[in-house]
Length: 163
Length: 169
Image (cartoon, rainbow over all chains, first blue to last red; front, side, top):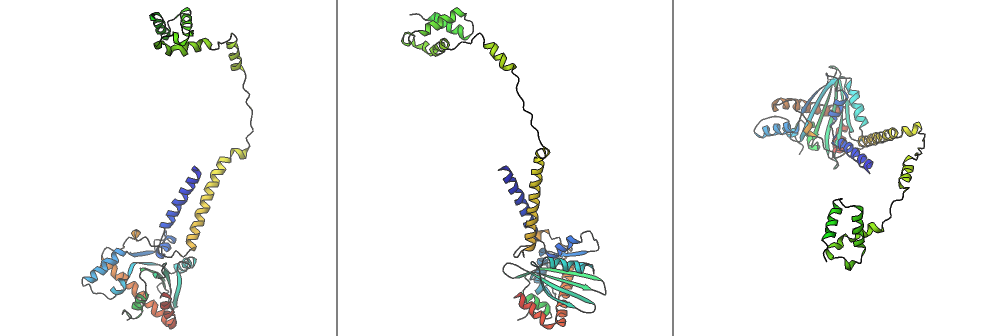
């Protein structure tokens, strides 16, 4: 009885620990290269996003506020170009969580988009991998929030919402 | 009838001051019929009647006890094998291994499952910038890069962005 209780307790603790481990992709990626000080991450939290939206409401003019209003958070990770493959591998490994969308390639740069959906089928996370071959810089842009058609169209159609 | 003498004897009996003859007097007194004993002294009847009826220890009592005490106790030697000796350790190791395997299995299941609907722990986010203007500059640059990425996707294959949007619907 005592043993069963202990086992149950240990399992519960482990389950709780795992349940709390809900990371965005950038966070997952950063755990891979935590010992590399050249990897930089810029974090914009939901609080900061709210502050930006609030400022815009107070008359602060900017071009992207319509898109920012839909976002909860943003993370921008910059690293050496050789991290591109590592990031892609991590996304492939978690391919049931992150779905590969479109990719692109030019002579000087290439990249790919990945998304994550919630239970309702809404896209709640967008990840962009981008490598600038000339500058040997790899960038991850990880946004969370309401990544809907309107948001994508805004970025795609020269910063105007699709009507 | 005056029972003062008997009462005195009882008092002395309980103070362990009575002689064997006096105790015999008490036993004889309480051996009579119950109705002949005054009511206030009847409570002592079971004590003295029991003493009279009780079995006395025999002369050989001490010898028998001593014999029992001196009798050597037989201790059987038991051989404990190495595996028996290590059994508690092995049990503990089995429990640890089981927990580890379960934990790994759960971890793997969670990794494999799409984890749809899980909320990100935003409380762990630490802002790089305190100033919204500086944060905005970074966000704007990032959104511009995403926008450029979309354009490059279109250039790569104009039809593919439509499928991305359709996929997100």
